[in-house]
Image (cartoon, rainbow, N blue to C red; front, side, top):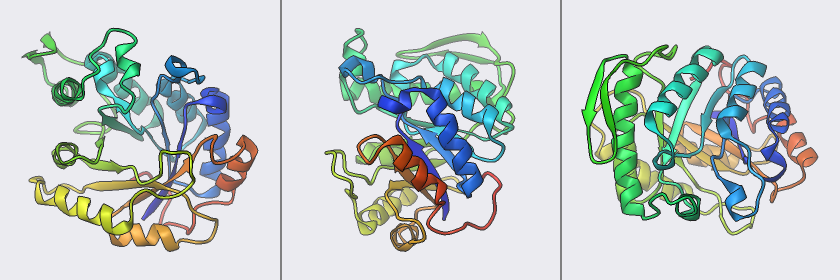
Length: 283
């Protein structure tokens, strides 16, 4: 089990300086990853920061943390722009970027700007967009004409530091999302409650069943990451270890305004992960 944090990009955490403060503290305290939400919170009245600017600021301020989105709704971003952004972030960070992708859980963040809000359409755009991203980030010359995207003989430059490309970790828990995750490099498993109560929404057994489902549909032999978000207390690894036994490889400590004040959250991060992991290098 490796330990990281996943921070909101809303409210106080819309300010990238808050993220840099958290990330520096996290690295000094022994955490291994820094992930950030990707919401257009201003659509529904909450200040929100751009996750890519936040991650770039964190990349320039840290040396070891894995960096990624949890998760970015690819259907409201252009794949060619995301490819360029990911490659640039990966170079800036020295090969520490992860692309966390999903449908997006707030349809208004699409519909308010005239983008398709229907889940079925967003899913099709996500699958097609991931394919375009994969090909661009691999360095090949890409010519593609699909239902949503067209690429005419383009080769991305510069390429990311990681080869063959930046890892793709997929969010979502419905069977199609789990099958999508099986095709790529990891699964971002949301296990925290979404109703404002600080607690877990899925047991280790539930997560374990989903991991088994993913692995049954997986054809590649490459390592596969499973990152579970949650709440832990300093020095108490009981809960993270239970999810590790269910198949999780990462625990992402959930940091957001509903859990506590910025100072309280900084203190939780400063206290360190529930247990020290084996090394400090990015996985």
